[in-house]
Length: 516
Image (cartoon, rainbow, N blue to C red):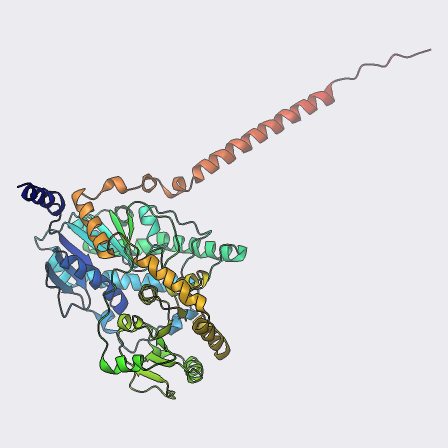
């Protein structure tokens, strides 16, 4: 009898609070890596038993079996142009000013395409209700209006951890004195690096507030004229889910409603295709795995960069497995095997993989840390650069900027990472840190989403700094007051001293007594 009562009590206390939530996910980017992360998150929530609707550009071919999963697929000229022939390598030539303006244009296209799509409009004008709205935060701030429209708490998902696009929205402190911006190799101990980082940070801040947000607000108002302005909706965030973890990202401040779930997309290794299994098994010296990810494609490498890689790989006693998107790799050495698509997580789990040459994207970076494989990064743009710098700083990898890639540099760096045991040892330690968690990342996400629903948006997690204008948040009014009062006191002191000096000068001297 006691066992029955205890079981009933356990069900009431533990199981009862877990209920199926109706969740709308908005993941409007067509890029494979962004879609994959959004899909992994929403599939994970569906498998927890939730009713999930996902606005995206691709759609699930094999929807999850648990819960309810529905795609709303947004297609447009933007998604059609995002195909295999697209070459993103030239982005590395953009200055931080041009890069920001490029992202402004991309953001306007994403927001306009999503809000104008007939399937999204059908959803907006339906009678559907949602308990929570999850939106990928990536230059698409006008989409936050969907949470307002459905009167649901807003959750943001960041594919690249905390950054200057998302920190201000929840008042997360991120001083540019030691937290790097994108597209910069940054050493906080170097004065000139800090000057550059502050300049990039300041330009980004001005760009967002003077150009980007007004443009997003205009698009949003076009479809939701009665909605509050974006400067209200932007700061009404209940929760931020970050694709980061202190095993892969530098330790930085977190306000209470920011939660790390980095590694949530990683799955247990599966069996490899027979040809790959044989290639990896029969590699007595080990294998170098090379992939530039899904957005950057190796087949678009500049000819001189490709030739550098081929010459260095040909000198290796190791085998090389190269993700190459064409049928033929010109000049391919005998020790190199290519594949248009490769099961990356399963490959990295193989014990014969000694080094991962990567572009440094956070998915690849996270997977390499999880499986304990040292990295040699060749970053091109965005968060790839700071990920690569993080690997070098913490001793579990090296990097060569794409623009600096040459034969001598590559040969030296690859030899170092292959033969110096410190990189593998440090990466194994990082892998242990990533795996040492109380709960799985998807369980963490599920808990906090339900928490926000239970507490009606969890306004108690909102920090007071969000209610202050920017100049008050930065204490500029206090600084101005102190400078003003100090200046006034100095001025009054100057007047007083001047008055006293003038008085002394005007006072007649007494006549000296004459002696006979």
